[in-house]
Length: 88
View 1 (spheres, rainbow, N blue to C red):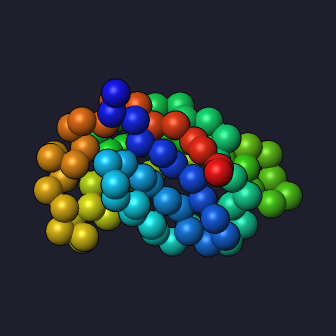
View 2 (cartoon, rainbow, N blue to C red):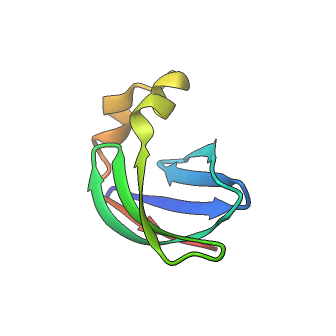
């Protein structure tokens, strides 16, 4: 199954799939992602916990990030059926 992994570490979010790890800067106040609400071909709706705040809904659009990294966006995203959060 095409499953990608979302996580964060300090000021960076990581999106891993098929041997690729794409990292991008995020808020230094982000503690962790808690739940994937929706995955839609590169667009992620996710619940996030920030320091001194309740959980809130966040949106991640991977398409411009992948384009800036010269990925073939459709080739990379099409096999992904599911995204899960993992902190290993």
